[in-house]
Image (cartoon, rainbow, N blue to C red; front, side, top):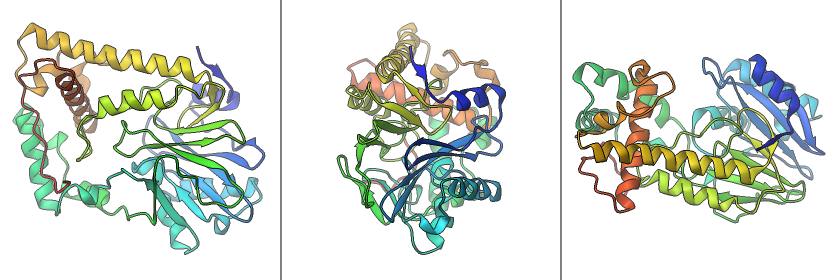
Length: 345
């Protein structure tokens, strides 16, 4: 069982409202940034104040409302946007690094991502090739023709992903954030994305987990990012990376702060392996010929038929990731799982 430490955050989560800005430790501030139109509602950005320098972790989804929320959080901490010298995103998803562009535009902030994080611009050489390859992939995965338009990327969506700028810094496992007055170490935790990272602040006994470990929600681990060959295997190994962090207070990017990391990691491991077991049972039944055939036999919170558009895409990619994992574990998986067009070596 976990022990909730972000009580105001927990209450806000239950009431479906924004939580307050909070000083978690001296010089460590939690700032909620709205995530419009998404049931997650907000991303928790973390302001880390050093000696004349400051880092902002996971600045959130790009929006005017989000920018105002960030500025209000800075003000509560006695800072301004110009005080931010570095922006660190635990991974490339837009609800984590979207606001980085505004902070970098001022010219005083660098941005950093994990060493292994591949940006969508690396996935394919051009928009047309990627979109065509994406459609070919989902056709091979067994998606009915009538639904291909829902699950494949369209040109506008792809251009939005490709617009993410390359960071100035790449952070290797074990690296220390280059911010004066901070002693925050990088932990490589691939799984949710190929180069996801967590941040360990031993001075304050804090672990910033991004989306790797959340208190209630299971992170999405799927065969989505190109160049990510076995996401489930990576995720399980990355859970082991946190095995010694049970004394830490966990600062996730969504929901609320908590303690009891070991129990939560064990729960996530059981859930992930249980999902693979469910996929394996479908394979043993012998009726599945495609990723689609497997996915429609799995347990989904609102039923498979309720999945549409992006949620259907993610469900199929999750199913594919478990098939790849099982094959790597030696299981017989007589299902083709091709990937779309990619220039990633």
